[in-house]
Length: 168
Image 1 (spheres, rainbow, N blue to C red):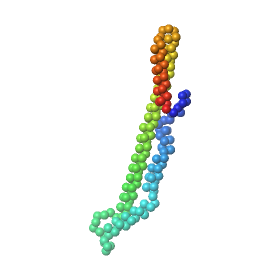
Image 2: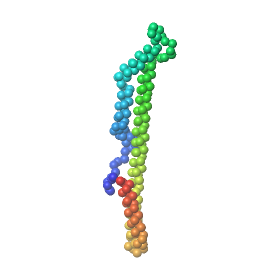
Image 3: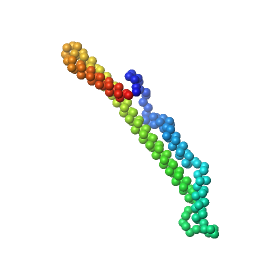
Image 4: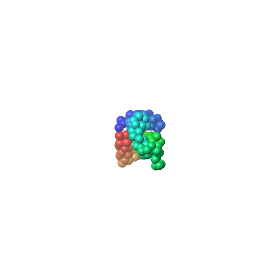
């Protein structure tokens, strides 16, 4: 909520605000840590070595001759598994960043719209105050009606209420 007469902060450009938001985002930091953990894990090769040994056991016959099964060798399989895991981690990071940017953009434009709405309402209040002063002057000069003064005061009160609720 803003107090009456309190000047709003200077408006940031969308790019600068997005940069600040992403730099401070805890969700982005967590997504980056997950990505780094999946792409830089040292135990990944050790975990996949068991899979390679199993594949090698199927590729060779007990007498040492190659098997007739068209299975890839263990090294190729390990490389493809790591490659797919890294690609999946990259896609998950990309999806998280795009979700954050989408949410930020919607919030930024909603806030910009609300700030513009408050500005327009403030201008309308100023205009209603001037109109009310003109109607009161006409009534004091004997050329206006009491109902016109009351209507203008009601409009002014309504505008002030709208402005107050928009600022909250």
